[in-house]
Amino acid sequence: MGIFLDTLPMSGIVRIRDMMYTIQNPFRLDQGDVSFDAPESFKQGMRKAIDANHTHYLPTLGVPRLRQLIAEKLRTKNGIPVGGDDEIIVTNGGTHGIYCALHAVLEPGDEVICPDPLWPPSLAITQSAHAVPVQVPVHESLGFRWDIDELERAITPKTKAIYINSPTNPSGGAFTRGDLERIAAIATARKLWVFSDEAYEDVLFSGEHVSIASLPGMYERTIPIYTMSKSYAVTGVRVGYIAIKDKVMRARAAKVALYTASNVCSIAQYGAIGALEGPQDCIEEFKTELKIRRDLFYAGLEDVAGHVFSGTPPEGAFYAFVKINPDWARDLGLDQGPSVSWATAEYLIKHGRVGCVPGVDFGPASEGYLRFCTCRDRTELTGALESMRTVFASATPV
Image 1 (cartoon, helix red, strand yellow):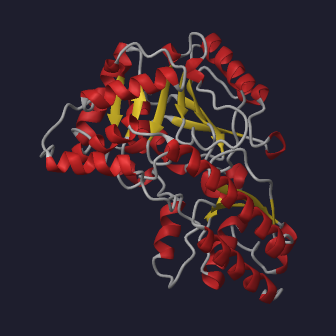
Image 2 (cartoon, helix red, strand yellow):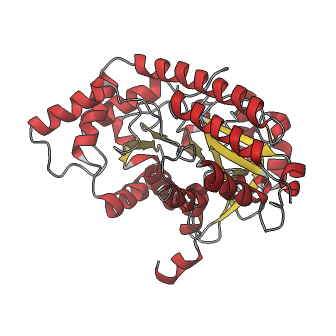
């Protein structure tokens, strides 16, 4: 890519992360990394792999047994009509899955309809394929979902695909079955691909998670993208997967996987086998605790910063995406620069040691918001709230 890389933005999440490394005793609410231990089945799978010396090259598409388990999971849990494990590609986490899928499908100049807000690497990966992300705002009044009519109006002759992330990072909004049926009808009528990023499929607190690829005729034009990071608390292990029915696109994605990773770490793949073969109780246990943490944080935020932030607990994922009171920001002079989101985030880091991510990093329509990660343990969440109480109580208007 060479000089083209100079045009791609570095995620603000990374910039915030680097700032937090300089802070003593920080509250890492900037980082979407659950504090749970990985399930014993995952750990045991990795131990067995090491003891058996499974430390050598593997098939690029993944360990056959893991692909079999994934295919069965997609059929039974997600309702996707996967024909065989040859349709599965194991990836180096969800990010790599996004990269493989988008680079398989997109041509230079193609447009991809994406939500605003959306996780910044998804936007950058679209750009790295020399395609153009076209962000269509989701609306807080609709539970951070699209107005589907507005989405359809954004489609042009250059549109190649629609990118869905449900539940969404950062807003936690989740598309309904009705939403997805309308999107499916549009994609079919306009002959569009759909990229379905389902990283948070197991973190939905109400309603049902629907995979758009499970709808009639949609698997043929959808690439569903998954990660084990969130469901099994293994963000550092890096195991994800995609499913592709179309043989041409699957062959392209396999080449991308080969030339970017050769194969996913053998120990990680055997850990994933252990997790999928083992009990799934941890998924529900994690979700129950994440809902407690979500509610704890929102109640605390209302108590200590109700005059600063506003927002409603989300349907899914594990973030608080809250709106900054513009009057408060103006009183403190945080509206003088190009971004209130960035000024407020830096203010909280400097004065309260509380990490958070500016909303504008997820898209221009999300300026004026902040994202806090509510997946941290209760002690850290409580500590962050108390720190914010002190900061806001002592804040001096300019």
